Amino acid sequence: MPSSSPTIGIIGLGNIGRFHADRLVDNGADIVGSDIDPDARSRFADSYATTAYADVTDLFDDADGVIVATPNRFHEEYAIAALDAGLDVLLEKPVAHSLESAEAIAAAAEEHERFVMTGFKNRFSNPVEVLKSFQEEGRFGTPRHVEANYIRRRGIPGRGSWFTSQSASGGGSLIDIGVHAIDLALFFLDFPEVVEVSATTRSAFGSREDYAYLEMLGEDLGPSEFNVDDSVSAFIRCADGATVSLEAAWATNRPTNHEFLLRGTEAGALFDRNENSLTIYESSNAGVDHLTDTTVTTRPNDDMLAEQAAFIEGIESGTPPERNTIAEGLTVQRVIDAIYRSADAGRAVRLDRTQDATVELD
View: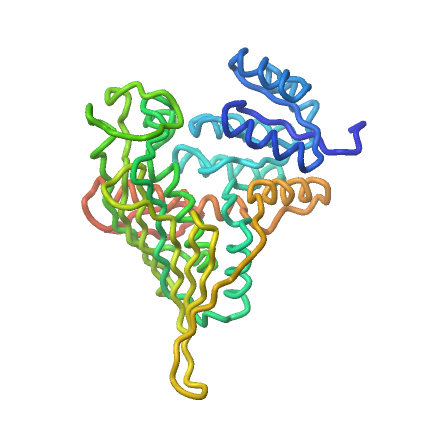
């Protein structure tokens, strides 16, 4: 490319696309965009003094890499098109609206020998970096369980938006924010093989005429435009004996909670995503028996900025990032699929990996 800075193309110029654009500028990248909405293209072009294309293939000609920030149902279409064009992809979470679609993206990445990085930005927050480094050093001993919470008391993104449409999103609170909780929990456990999932999903608030809230990301078009889950509870068993308990909600009658509690054989850790805080819990009989709670203080950082930096480095070096791989994203998607199947069946489902396929064992 003629420019010394990488050019990153953003497909989908809504809120998430603009969040990425702001940070790409800070990362020193040149940007171009594409969207099917002419108004979105015009706003983007004016805001960033760049080009926004109606035809995504024109964007591919100008870009060194692509960020896909469309509604979930269109991830497969645009990610595979970018891979076909020989470009690496940063794909906003989740990988796709369905397991089959996610598997198609992973297969295309392997076929074209390009990398797809999944948009789990929480992994790049400084407290998570510290927690993970302690885990890799063995400070926690053997991690055995993660309590993963991503709970909003009232936080449906916008009834009537694509977030609350099953056909566009593939699910509700689970696939929107629960996906982050699943990813972080499995990340803290080094992504063991998941063998069983038992779950319940609920739709208790989004379909109510009297849904009371203080703020909403989008316009509220009412309960007739809501046909997805607004909360989920799940228990996940792994082949190595580790477990995860998951609570995710857009709306529920309990306090907001974004805490992740890792329990190991030698120590534990509490990461509070809302507070961006980290506490380590240890015990010892040195001197006398005692318990120690250690507060870890880090500099604040922009996790999306750091995520993008890893993506850009992968493009420039030709070496796929080791973090947020498509394989990990596909594992998370398999768990999401199993949670929905378990909820529909009213019982636990077992998972085995057979040629990268998920099967249920009766």
